[in-house]
Image (tube, rainbow, N blue to C red; front, side, top):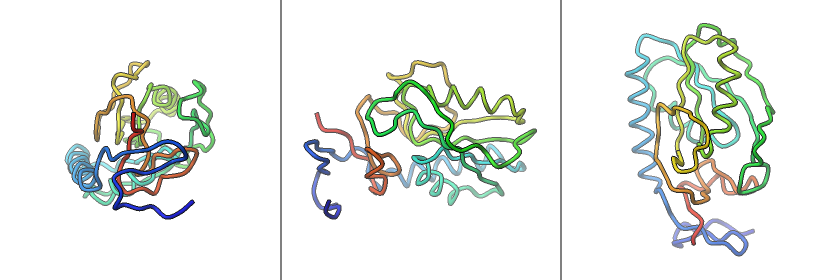
Length: 186
């Protein structure tokens, strides 16, 4: 594997090409807007941001830099993909929360909501812990792929059903470090 060449208009992954979908600049602007909205919505409260690993780490990091209220953070790790491009349909908990979320305001941060399976699974788990409120933020949402009735309160971008990489999103654990989001070329 060589270096990432950002001067090219595509990223080569084996025999597949990924073309730019959402630029670094558009990502930064939208993340700033979401951070401002959350700061307004949670003024006077102390929310806990829960990042869903591994994919949400870049979005969560940049989002917290835009939030102007006091907050805490924790992480959960789920898996439904493994190294594949499509979900296995089964969710496994790989890392549980460390924080006590009872009577706390929770903002779950995801990289992408595809079928809604993971959000549906987490919602059931988190509600058992009796938080004061739960809201969901996702950088990307694929509305045409949703199979579960889930509500995403803060959406970065709605996208179509293409497979995407970059800005935390991976292909077999690689390409998370791309500064923009790229979609699989037809």
